[in-house]
Length: 282
Image 1: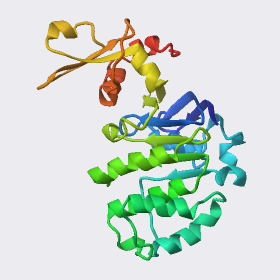
Image 2: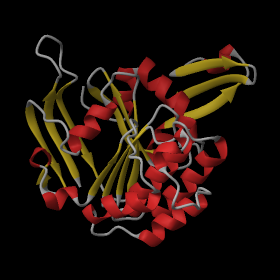
Image 3: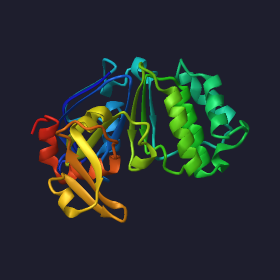
Image 4: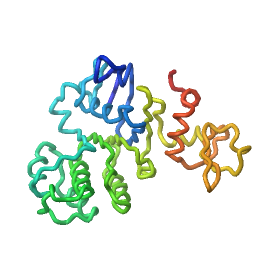
């Protein structure tokens, strides 16, 4: 559904490029978690895939269209939910009437359902007077109601309270299907632990990991041990009040539960070893 081949991109000729010869394949039926430290290019990569930024070299095809050309047939089937929210001083109803026509598969019924689940029932409410969290709920609901094939989400849970984060996961699961592709850039990994089924980790302009959560737990073992001796041989360990949280290579193929935060730290600490485990190119 999205094919990124050998792209190079940078904002300034005086600085090293953010990406150099980066390649990536994303397929429908998945919710990808795009992880990385600040400044690693997560938002930039999503903008490149949606045609909002243009690579200096290489190619990007989104649903078979060259992304930089912004073909209308591509645009009607992708949606980019930015972290930087802009809402006009209009009601929710007026917002829908203004922007829904750009998306042929938009469903008002689903929009109203998502808003109801988020406990947003007043369609006449002025969006500019809403709290940050309320605005985010409206924009998330609109994004999902477009029924586009691809949705990019940049830090969607920022500004949501704990109950709303839980509801976000529920509405996302109800909106996902085999024909849709979601890419979610986030620092809030614990908010999305039960939602994401594939993880991409960016660092230093390259992809350190691009695997399904199932493959990750097949190859890595997330375990709490009681002593330093038991943690020997771990790819990564964290000493906590509850024990030593560790990541091992899962040589015995034991069933275990993914810890996304531990995974992220382990990948950054043992980049080359992780590449070898997952058979990634050097």
